[in-house]
Length: 159
Image (tube, rainbow, N blue to C red; front, top):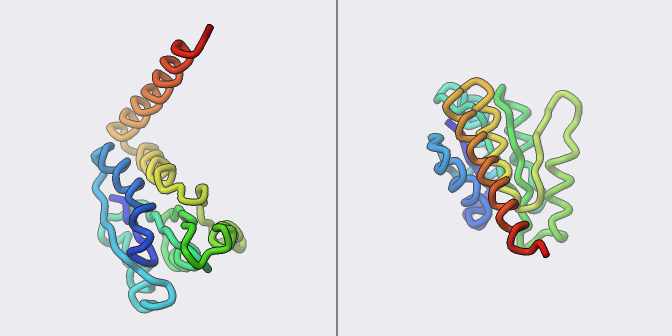
């Protein structure tokens, strides 16, 4: 199972891409809003107990100061993938990117591109696929589909 959390419901349109790709791989998800600044007690509970509910990977999306992924990673034994979200109060998303990317040694957060929730979902599936052959085969098939689409586009434009 993958936990998908975000700091605010305004992040949901971006995070929906992670939800969609994981559902396409038939990976069970749990989605919630956990604000690092407005619900710190919930953040602590979620971080410390997600693995006890069967979650294997956490995807955390956040905009602005974007403390959610790093704070979760500081308390959870699970891999955390951070999705920087370009929010309305953002500095072109750079504040979010740097807040998630610049973690201190010992507290890793895998970070995807700005608004890159789809890649976060794929990365979470790949992490699970490392020990689940069914998911691994779905990832292999997905990558073959990507290759086929490029080959088809190449054939259309090639002269």
